[in-house]
Image 1: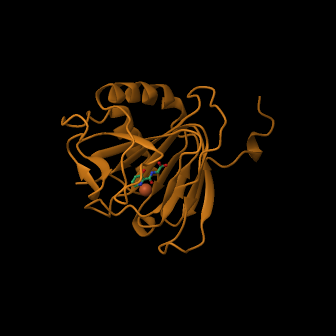
Image 2: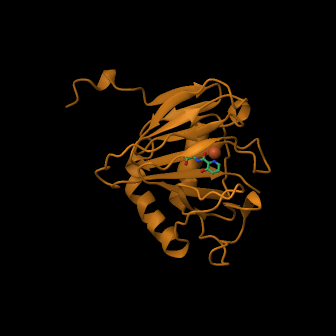
Image 3: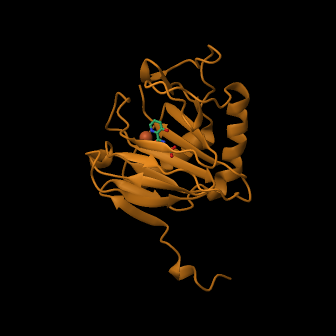
Length: 213
Ligand code: MD6
Ligand code: FE
């Protein structure tokens, strides 16, 4: 029995007018999500892509769904094929599309039907610098982010790079939705602190679901 259950962080927190943090929403599906990830990874392995500036990203990535987010010296964009294999990205597992649709609906975005799921893998020290997501054609659709494994600090800023940053710890099973007037807010992830997760080990997996095409 958890005597302090009432003192725990609320299950749902608005971190912006149209940004909702759903604590633990993916917990009951974590096993199925990891199984789906193993299936995707077998066809499209994690790899470190180059930024347009010529650096190697500290985060390793793969994708599933009709469109996959890629980065190389020519820029950031979506591609229907995996540049590593020349094959289409693995199909979007139903468990991911379903979770994203439910989470988006909780945040007031009904009918979210993602065609792209970027999967990021962070190891201790890996980070994602502050950016806006503006490579998608339809900016009316929200972004749904699902975290598994080690806890990371997510930075949520404003519409200017220099706006004040909120810090939110995203843990195993947390789901974050942002869209509408919050869709283009700057965000990033601080370098991952080292602490093994009991189920997922020394890594953080983040699924980012979007409507890209
Ligand atoms: C995350 N990823 O990994 C959040 N956005 O927790 C992103 O915000 C992101 O990895 C645009 C393009 C690539 C990304
Ligand atoms: Fe992003």
